[in-house]
Length: 443
Image (cartoon, rainbow, N blue to C red; front, side, top):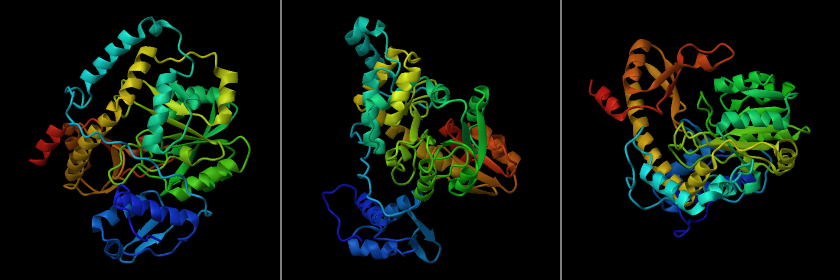
């Protein structure tokens, strides 16, 4: 295990995380083996306790290790030893001011001056080229920038030719049904994003709800079903907030690989928002068999009104797309695509994400403080822009406080197909008003 750290090798906690993860994946650390205590490892490596704590928290989030109260940390990854992938590159942080070019609008974070400037530059430089037809898969310039961003931010190595641009994820799901076929059966998580089941229903597709356990979609139920496509959100499930551990991800990937013509649709809708450690690696980035389709959107990271989403297809499906759907036009105006491409290439998108993370980290703290005043238990609060609250009493008081602060407080039963615990609520703070939260804490 860990010998020494490289002072010039970047983040110390990332070095610790990467080395332990590598030992687990190579089989040098096996399931059930106890790791050094945080204090012992910190002393041995001559780093702060918080550095080791951050590394262990990331390993726990990804399902490589588990914490046992009053006992310590143990390896829980049970997959076959493999060669680990290249370490995931990190999002580059810009050292310029977080407030450069920001005009208050919505949550006050979007850099409208930058966007307007980029729009003008696109008009001036592209000119009449903006009037020419756009490839059905989207403007190459945008697909190229998305590929570069995915490599930097998510460790995903993908070619621009594998990327399809669409007008939001709903459009892309409809296209996937046409690509993969309506005769298939699709598995969806229960509870789930309700619009997803409606999309499958309106397309006359046979879909089956699969229940969740504490690690995500049940592999036992999935294997017992006759579905051939599993639609999941492993990085941060909506609405439960579950982050699927590495062992369950591998189980579901083994399910897909165990029979011909099975696929996984990976919805990575808010993976940028993690409040400890780095984003959990994507299943598409782990996939070596060409069974994972990656879907994401800019609606969460820029604005809900920005109807630009994208998906990454396995190479074998690119040929099928060309054969079946190459006649389709891209529904996103090319003018917006070029502007977004420059927003990404200029580093503005990642700076915007950093501003959003700073903003929502504060919002999250205020919302958690608000809920700390009530008789409830909070879970799954370490990622995304929502968490769960199991309310024991005072439901109406909580609902009134949330309404005053712009926090959405919804029974989880509204997202469930099977009967759900009526005490559990989804707390979504995407549109929370910080001033109202500050005022609420003074009451």
